Length: 256
Image (tube, rainbow, N blue to C red; front, side):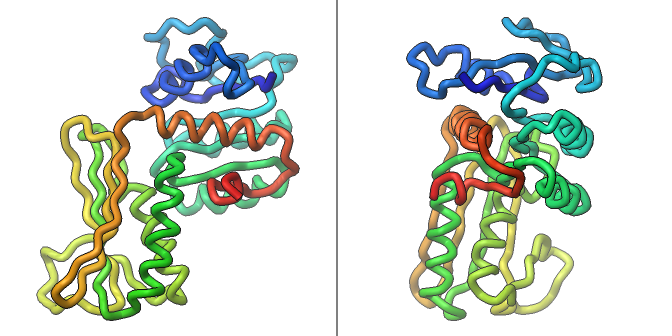
């Protein structure tokens, strides 16, 4: 049985992961929750919850940590994982560039799994978008539209940027990302990807990659109907990571 700790256990995603593991009566995942970490104490959990990682007893060890907290504390939980020599799945969104660099350095010491989105469907969408851009060439304009709930802090979403990166990497990184056109008075350039963000209601996460050509439009879409798709991916990532050597891992490496 793989023992897991959840950083941000009382948040929406932390509770989705908790519920999925605790209700796994058939042992689909083969894991249990050893403890959680969260400054909020508004939720009652059947496992110990510590306000900070520094309060976790030295002898309370786990096989993997899942982080679904806030981008401002990502570095500190990774440092905790390094000190405990524990694999970590980083599932927090809005991570800054300097923290991503720190994550790359940390992966030389511990197994570290990071993905902008833990949905298996999004992983497939990235590959479809990459292949479509190769087949269609410069004759189609590429736009990405992402929609999320009104409480999401970062924009554009990390998933939208990951989709753009997938397309860009297949085209020698020639595209420029354009986030705002209202202040521009110019024709659309062929070497740009427009990325638009919509925030409203309780939209869990919708992503569209649009290839617009002359007299035809191709749209690749993914809609998350429940947070369970992200929780499922994060749990599977933790189980996958638990016995791996130090290094960087992602959804593509897990699916392979």
